[in-house]
Length: 210
Picture (cartoon, helix red, strand yellow):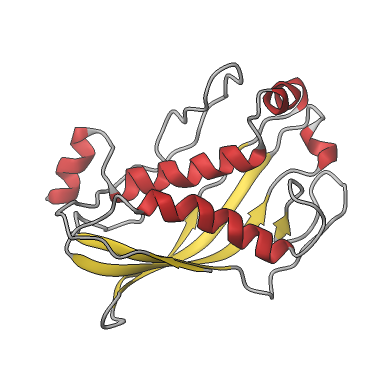
């Protein structure tokens, strides 16, 4: 799904972020990931203005409604009523990424194309067990010039998978409103902040500029 915006150009940069995994979450407070999500290799500081985000969830991706530990499918999503899971994932990703990219407003107009390749959240069975599980978010990102269509970056395969909450932690999180949707949304927005706005360690920013 395409969401676009048109705003005055202000010079802002994009920066490298370091890849890493996240640690455990204290559900009594807001989620904070200890390390930035994975970054696209070889991206240096850019003067991009993201005028649109286009999320595509191909109909070729398989879907499962099985309440097993880990269904064999590309899409597993349970926090919306049973329905068109492709559209639901598209909506979630679009609603998370569009506002996150609004602050990326340099002078070169670009469109960020996101093709989802895997969106595997928790089933009810695994969420309320003590079994370890993950929120798996994988996609291919391509950035194109908004006026010429020339590819400026990518296509790059990205994996933003992170540990999920389970058992008593999941029950406490649900009670606090810390849903899978909210944690996935924050993961995506943290990635945009780190990758495109450069909220990373100064040493990484220096390395990116060299």
